[in-house]
Image 1 (cartoon, rainbow, N blue to C red):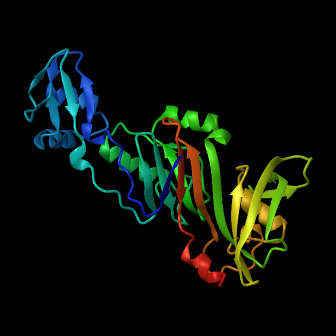
Image 2: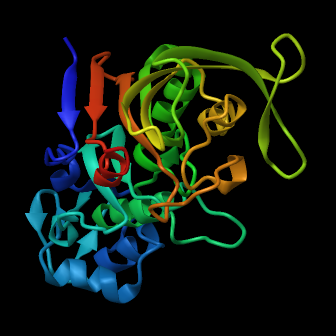
Image 3: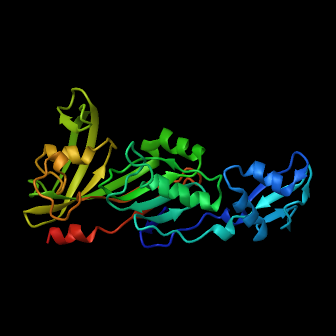
Length: 306
């Protein structure tokens, strides 16, 4: 049995953050000089703050004197617990966190990663800063992306080895990715399997070409949840994960996503692209357990299809 988590469940903090970071001394020095050399990314002031707040231990004893000698064989522990605070950001919520992965619910309008024009207002940058406040050595690795105007579930790796394990076996590790979308009009069928090939043009727009020709195969199954004929709420399960797959395939069958002018929409009733990554299920790369995450359908999606 796997574990299922909703978006309102408090995220689990990784178990080792309160233990800090252990470093073995190799050459004789004073403690401050050793810390300045070890923590090159931190300022002299911040390192002295660690000392004054009792966050440095030498051989399991708290030390506050910057001129304390350290010798080969000593173990210096740097505790970052004092700087750790509950994560809060209006652009994303952390749904789950452990020593390997972070699963988030991203708001529409937030980039997944940096572009030439925008470096900091990204999920990658926000999470990277959060982890470095816990330990400046921490890193974040992108596993997959959501379009800027698409909201919903994403996950990031906290170790390069975890990133490789996930990406090298993506189709086996990901057991379900489901979206909800509000489309213009009503589908002829209440459920259907969309199979097509996708090609990207020079304007970086993806479009459908006949199966058996060029491009990459894309497979999406949709199910009608609600409709008022003007707009319809669909649930979409991805069997492949191509760039802009849902947007291009829905446009090709005459069901453009509301607010998606790039892919054929004629209306923008809520001021956003009506696409949300609702479910994300995968095999945990370390434990082998299936993890299942699900968010609620955004209120605007429900109200527009009443």
